[in-house]
Image 1 (cartoon, one colour):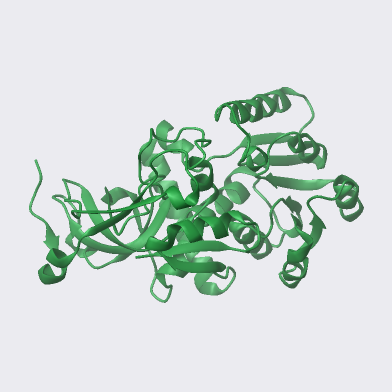
Image 2 (cartoon, rainbow, N blue to C red):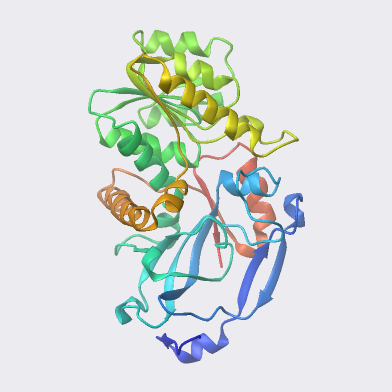
Length: 355
């Protein structure tokens, strides 16, 4: 049974209409459909967020190719995360949430002007941080923080290797690592090397045939952690670049983005390697990290860690330890342009979508 809604401005709310982007199947970016409809109605324990910023992450790039491991059946609304203002609430929700700016991790559904979520899934955004700035560190920031501090457990003085150091997750990962007193070696295209140097990263060309030798020259004993979103055969090289006691965190399979065939197989191969390496008596560790995976195991624990860790990331943003890297900001109706840009490999940071 739906309940009466609380709201801050009934005149504005009745004027609202839903705008959402639908992924109808395996399509080019121009095949994404912009649709209009009614604003969602809250149920008990739910809120409706008026979206102020969402973004294009690697997950959506894979989803439009039908390549994301556990994506829904077509058609659906993509969008892994969003930032916005709580518009309406359902029964049992704290009334003070209305009018509050919050962030939410939803996996799908965020490419819409209004998004309904459980109130327990929202995280307040501190004053002084804009919606677009906050958006750059929601899925990217929570991924980076949890990989660094919950999986690799980095310490001051460590040396790490970040593949794709100019990307959405990579840029946040680099900054959080530096805030923890960690030295960073980062792979990227040469056109991004000057930017990486300005950020205190020691850059290496990700296409260099002697990439491993270059990393070894910078870290002769190996690195304390590798963060690898590429997957594929290169993951073996990442493993062998670890120092004794080091940790490999694989968090994607970008090398298979344009491949045909099973969307599950690349992930299953990665998991197989991780399990095998962890069974070896070598003192090293390997993980395949997916920020959403823990939700299925324990929703309450997932929510508690999300709130705690994202609050830490927002605090780092407020302190200036992390800077919002907005590659571009485009309206939701220009989603095709936004996806093209995000997939071009020419930008650093996050492509943000606004209403």
